[in-house]
Length: 137
Ligand SMILES: [Zn+2]
Ligand SMILES: [Zn+2]
Image (cartoon, rainbow, N blue to C red):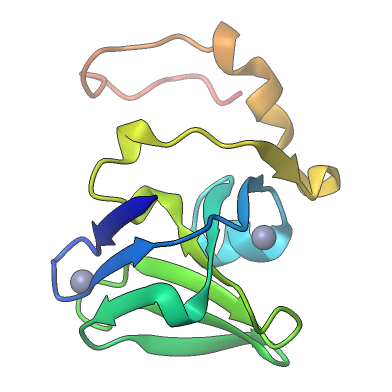
């Protein structure tokens, strides 16, 4: 499987051809905080087969666990942990074509944000809303 991706500003690019070791949505509180998003999705890759180009800054979010991001635009690129030295978890949203992405599993459900259950009943708009909502849900 050949995949590639990049950060928002394009300073960092990645390319991978190899086995996908995990393909999952993570609902853990650390990922929510680190990505400023209700959840994130990862593709597990073999570090020696992942070709990264560009400057990447690492934040140690817990001992032996590092979150790599672009120092220019702040895009989160991956998560890696000394607990899983043969894997690097690349954020699926950084794929060149994230629309191709389909996760296989969801993990850490105990911290899943509860409003995800109501997504289908929340009003939708094709563009950004013209006026701010007056209701706080
Ligand atoms: Zn960038
Ligand atoms: Zn997580």
